[in-house]
Amino acid sequence: MINFQVGNLNNVLSELEQKASEGVFQINVTTEPGNSNFSQIIALKQGRIVYGGSELITPEALAERIAQKLDISIINTALKASTSKIQDKTSFEELFSLLIRYRLLQTHQLEEVLAQDIIQTLEQILPYGGSVSPRPELKFDLSCEGLPWSELSPKLAARKLEWRKLLPVITSVRDVPRLTSDGLNKISNITVMQHCQKWLDGKRSLAEIAEAVNQDPLKLAQNYYLWVKQGWITISNQPTPSLSSSKGESPASSQLPTILSVDDSPVVQTMIKRAIGDRYNLLLASNGIEALKILNTNKDKIRLALLDVTMPQIDGLELCRTIRKIKHFADLPIIMLTAKDGMFDKFKGQFAGSTEYLTKPVDQEKLLATIEKYVVSPTTTSS
Image (cartoon, rainbow, N blue to C red; front, side):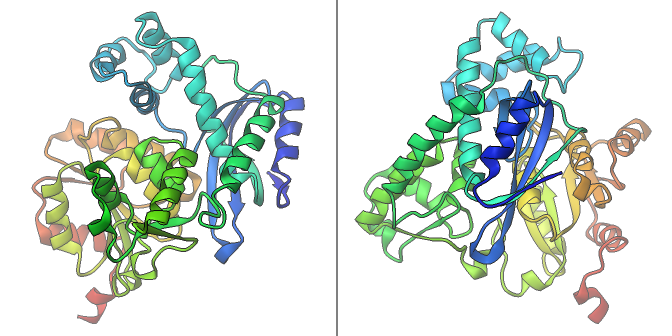
């Protein structure tokens, strides 16, 4: 692990470049307001940065993100055809080589999007102090040139000037936007209104919103700056206290053990909430990517995870394996939920690293009993 002081991450990156370092690294930083912590992931090839993000997502998820940015509408069909021909589902090189061979994607397009992600990742962490740690259990095998620090530095400096133009309204990519009391009544653009209603809830930072909607945080911040001037929204550097959870944690629920439930079915999520919501603080995610983000921002709170087996993009088994690779969650109790049955499915769940395996529809009492084997709610002990 390499520790660095405030503003000295660039020296660490230069040193890693000079050493032609290889592999995936996690950069943990501490921000000044409230001393909150967050982390980002970078991948290096011969010292050049080839990947940047809040987590190392799967090859398929990365392909979908890139397709969304480039407006490649047939990517989902192409991915289904491609993945059946790939031997190693964790290999970025296999998948993207196939997509390039099919002429769905060009090498320069891929590298341009990766470069944007790297720049947006670094500008979030460069101002702070923290540490850089290798993550040998993760791999990013994509063959691309990457960016040396000598090329990254002027690009980041130019963006820094653009960020300064937003002061004092927006001070950081970690700032939290929220609607004003009468903001919605003032907005006439339906697209803007829908965006504000969905994302500006006082819980998510600008960086988190930008990642969720797959947009450049600087461009998003420039829009928010104008919306502040219109009186539609306001910006602060702290989330609303009563809305500190990613899915609306209340002051009362914040005293309860936190459980993450991952399922793409709103019906199932409603059932789970009704079954355990009075005894546990429940965080909800509809897919694996969202689940990893919630895990990353609630590392010391989540006590157990409920994972649906059949989900799009990243299924429950793959998500379970990914969670197990994160050192902090190596021993996290994980209960797999599936509509399937049979010894083979149960074996797959255990092989993926699950702690328990339940079939749907899950009986409320059985679900509660299973959870309480690992996490006992204070409402249970007091009742």
